[in-house]
Image (cartoon, rainbow, N blue to C red):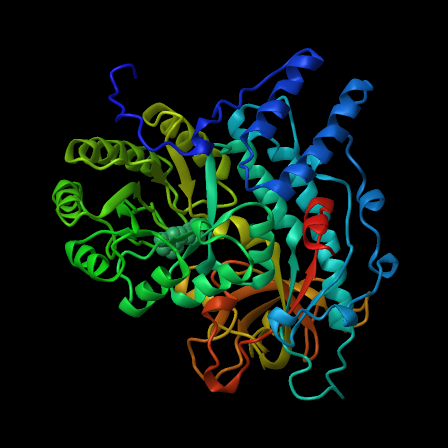
Length: 542
Ligand SMILES: Cc1ncc(COP(=O)(O)O)c(C=O)c1O
């Protein structure tokens, strides 16, 4: 792509000076160390804690390499995960003030170290994928242990109202692994975590410790981000149509970076916060994403130049371009198109007289397709934007979806007999959480959470036990509304009954944050925090 015209290097960001190349190496030991050196060099100056920690881990890795030991020494689950009974039980003394009554931290619950995650043999777009997978598999066993212990503490026949409420186990080690995965695959792009996705203060605390920024869309999200103690320059107010009083608040607390996509917003910003640093949000093709955003936000390519000209006339400072390919995006080529469009807007802005220094590639990253997307996005960014241009992103779901597991109690069961064939009997199970609660992701985020049996009181070995043949269920929430259905049909082992527990993995994104209190059910559920990574434990003091 030699004929690409870059806009003039202007207000360059210090991070952009770092070498984006994070090459792959094979062969001798010293060349295998090269990516480690690049990796360290790529950490931002803000990543102080994370850098120290990373250095520690990398030194461990280096010492393994120089001692001739294989770089990745897999540990068996037994070696790296103590059973729950071996864990220090500090739960009751660890109530978190920020989270309200319902939360506690369990720790330290550590195993291994994240060098398990580094695979020096892989290409850039799949760095560490396999080993990260192994870490999260063993971490899952740990989560299950904690879920079971907590569930078996509850006696539904005698407990007080609500003591059997649904609860979460949140593994901060999983968030940490996702961060390392990001750094290894998209080291040039600085994450600004999308608070909307899961505003849990504990997640925000870890994000701050990791050196990430925050994407906020309201006053209270800005408040939450600031409460972590970060500088306002680490926040982007990424809502193109802002509430005027919130804009005044942003000015007061010094949150300067913000997006816009229309002329009215420019006049509003001129009147309210003329010193703001603006990002023009452009339209993307989000047709393959789970949650489409472009019908609501984004300036078309036709509108970009007139908006840049208006901003210039109003003496407003446009510093960057942003886009969002849609949440839960499926087509990585949407990123390629958006990056090339952003390049055109950068060039137009230069012609108009603005000095742009940052590209914001938004969110839309998913657990399963991350490496594929990162490969395409990383290459597009490096092709179209020179190193002095700072690149940021607004990942939400990617960081937290897999870190939270939800347990819910079976509060009722209804037998649906098949009069012609009793072996085809089915059952309706009613849980104490549903689509008006933490399963709001079914309605708002088009998700299909999968139930698994956590406890089944039926005797093991009997026809009704959890190890016996599968039985067909439908699973319902606790409210009186017919749409409150979690699963219309699912086969589960054993005959479940009132008091048993089910659990659901991957419940960290767009769940708790969009829960309601409809019908008087709680939207404030206990969260038990654990860490399956020493890195996260050290940052969070677990
Ligand atoms: C402006 C903006 N940034 C980031 C996100 C986070 O997206 P995701 O969770 O898909 O990464 C969203 C989600 O709606 C958004 O609207």
